[in-house]
Image 1: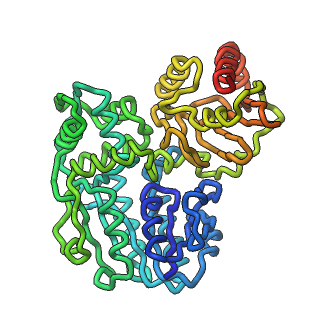
Image 2 (image 1 turned 90 degrees about the horizontal axis):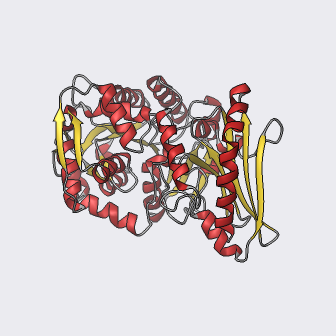
Image 3 (image 1 turned 135 degrees about the vertical axis):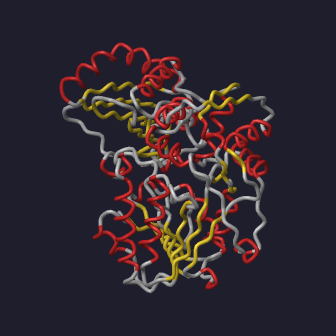
Length: 474
């Protein structure tokens, strides 16, 4: 059958896509910018990519009429540029519904959040509103509602991991006693695939959760136990939601916007209501401890399929990579250096491994300091790291950079700065003429402050960039 997969570069969709391909379905992947879609990873004659911006109604005409099923996996919880994500989600859902009513789609499958409280967070209220909009369509809607999703690369997993691995003792907010029902990412994908054209699930909603109900404090302690770590947690009633958000933001790799939304959601219990969907589909629920072990198996084998950090909505991802991939020339400052390398292949491997646990090859303490200052200024900092220590693709996060281009054939890596800056910055590595490495930093300042910033950091650039290129090329 022909399936429309929205949010195709997002965390859930990248896990679901291989399952759909493996089942022999033709999949149309909706992306805002096709450069972000890793075609090499999903190389298959069954996969097509179409560029659709669900906030631009005209682009939805690219969705063909002969689709059978559509997965709606779009949300704006992690947006860094728009505070009113509720209206954006509602508008996106409305445009989607109107377009699909003009197609032959039989079923829409929507992944939402568990809503079992009268007082919902903004995030869960928005999810519920999207479900209401979609349910008014002429097609059959199947809604799956999940709480905390545990898997390698998921926001919940990475935040818990950051807290447990970095803090032997935690003074934590009271909402850590709130209960939730975490579910393994494998089970989420099984449910999403299992309801496909299952008429018993048409026009119905189902809560999906794992086999255990745990408080967030219990989740942290159980995570520590699985990893062989001893941790102590003390909860205090004096932490306001704002202080809690700052606590998450500075200790973990999350953005401040996402931290606010997570804190507001974590104050509400998300426990799945009983239903017979698991029995209907024959799914074995994976326990919390086992889901952690499975996640680390993927991490240790460098097989993390998707990460919430790559799906994080930033200005560059909202505008599209294509608008930034042409590095400007006029009105810019440049620091360009070249060096011969005796081993181009080894140099290329070093370039492809830059950042994350590998570091930046020279002056790493200065890079860490810059990341810390960026966090203080409300930026992303260095904690995002990278998904794989050896492989990288366009659209992925790399510390406080975003990958614009990663082409091994051209031997070129192009990065765009997502740190807080009074301007725009690019960093490019390229191997030319067989054995010449070119490293270019480009900065386009915004007014006087941008120019003053460039001259202020120029001495550090001379120190860092020279040493970095030498370590890469040697």
